[in-house]
Length: 172
Image (cartoon, rainbow, N blue to C red; front, side, top):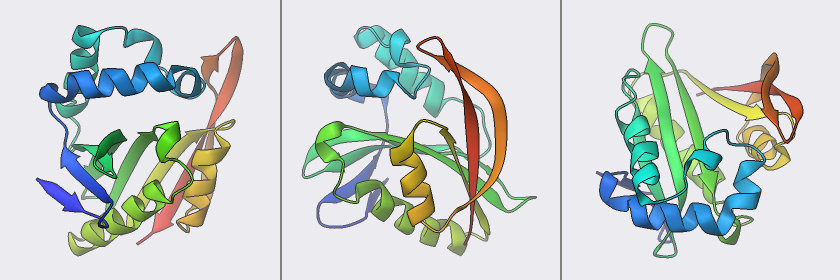
């Protein structure tokens, strides 16, 4: 399944066959991604990239949906509806984007389109979690209209420093 966000931005269902493209993307953006994503150090070759992809698409979380982000005909990142809880009418999303695709509003446009889809499915709240130092992700959450609704202290240690996890919530 594909979601055409704009002429330049498409979400395509993530699969194991994307491992080479995803690995190359991680390699080329490793320094940036390591600052905020716990799994980057575990992605060291095609096999470990396949495991990364498998962990997402087979997460077992309710109604999880994972996509590769294609921007200007190049794989440029990953976007996921990490889980969907119909009882609480909320979905949690996660994403990462290569440096070359940043500053074009790619993730903001994706979030807008995904919110429209989720709302049509009866979902009323979107959750975005970001580490406290991930200013780009926090800015995306805030631009989407999400508000800061929670903190988990000392959530993850990055480069010897613990960071809090911020939760942002958007009403759809």
